[in-house]
Image 1 (cartoon, rainbow, N blue to C red):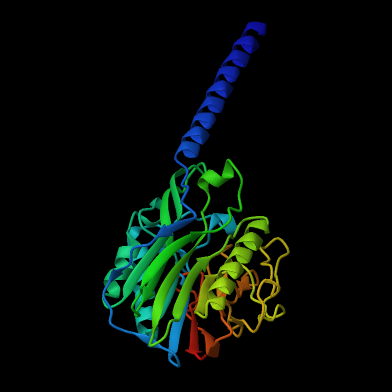
Image 2: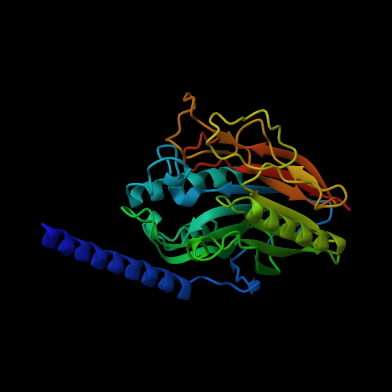
Amino acid sequence: MKKFFKGLFKTLLVLLIIAVVLVGAGVAYLTVHEYKPEAVEVVETYGTNSKNVSQGDTITVITYNIGYGADDDKHDFFMDGGTTVTTESAANITANMDGIINKLTELDADVNFIQEVDRDSKRSYNIDEANVLSGAFPESMIGFATNFLCEYIPYPITNNIGKVNAGILTVNKFNVDSAERIALADGFSWPVSTCQLKRCLLVERVPVRDSSKELVLINLHLDAYDNGEGKAAQYKELCEYMENEYEKGNYVIAGGDFNSMLPSVNKNKYPLVNTEYYMPPTLTTDNLTGNWKYCTDDSLPTSRLLNEPYDKNSENTQYYVIDGFICSPNTLVQNTKTINTDFKYSDHNPVLLTVTLTD
């Protein structure tokens, strides 16, 4: 018996050493291949358009987190308390993308800020959603900035996320003069950072006809699962960038998924139904001076928690208002409207902004 336990101990020790070596090798591989973008990178825009913008024009802008075509009303997500890692088939992704495109086509905005767009990811069956979107809007300029690039995400262990290549995409009817990817602060430290998003701003510059001004359009998606410090640092960088552009005399419209409530949101409308659920912080107004406009519509939720498939009658359905816009003082906001899709294609609803360039 003593000999048996001695042999068992040796076997377990060998297995433990092998496991440690494999984990170490995996971390080393991910560290070597970690996506490390430059602070500022040029973004190539492609497509055709002929629309100009002038001082005094009223324009429309949509922000829509499309949940990489997988987070529809029939699914949950393991990181939100659900069980699903991805949808069951490529056909589901295609159907959701068709629905998303039909909704954007129906709304017919001048500019679309789109988040969580996959290019080559296991979770969306390697469908190039950026290519699908650009094909649907051939008369617009398309700009794409990568914010999630990892060769292999090993969790969950039994059904891992695997390879991810994703980012944010802007569909723009206006004549884009230039576009850049602006890196934001990293909310995660090593080794977790090797498998995390690298948040950024996708900034497009549109010349304003008969003036020296530019319309600066900023598509964004801030941290979600950090401890709060990442979001705060990223928001501060965003505000500094916007303030600098406004001081130059430019018009600034920033929009996207803030993963935080804008100051204009009534916090009492969508309270936590479970204290264990995610509670988004509220953006401060301290980082911007002057009459900046915080634009969202809290008459409807802009997102839902993916703790279970969507059921508006369930007592566990948790809603949020975390998508919207910030506009510079030299604009006049006409309307902000959350579009009710009943979360059919994504865990977010699109938000439509109507704004006039005034001064």
